[in-house]
Length: 157
Image 1 (tube, rainbow, N blue to C red):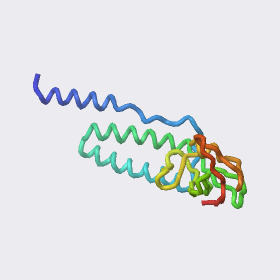
Image 2 (image 1 turned 60 degrees about the vertical axis):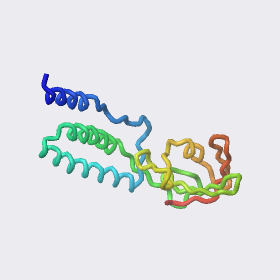
Image 3 (image 1 turned 180 degrees about the horizontal axis):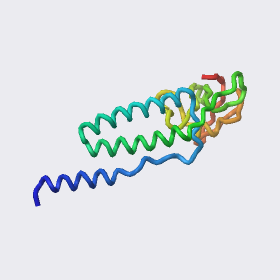
Image 4 (image 1 turned 90 degrees about the vertical axis):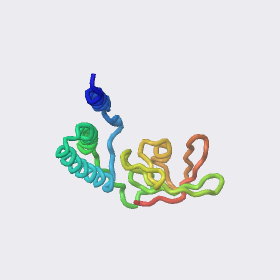
């Protein structure tokens, strides 16, 4: 068997085995920024697909096609949700400043799953912290992993 033939088989197996990206079973709530991010991702992937098709790069086409299926499904299920201005209850899309019992403050914005990035101060609406915060007001306590956090400020952003 020629070596080239073996490589082609390996490449086909790699393409066949990439699988689909898992799609969350939770509601796909998104902020305006999250919706724009999905649209941007779709546009970039369509451009990438065109380039990969011109090069006849089958592996890249398979990967991009998988990602396009994921982002298309996420776009179709996206539910834009805006926080009620001036709300005194923690809701999706709001910023929440918390103070731990050690006096340390943190600020989180509650966003959709695809736009969450804790390193940048955004958490998913289905994260344990967000779930512990929902419906609470300034001065109330949320407990996550045995640690108490007091809500000290709410913002629309």
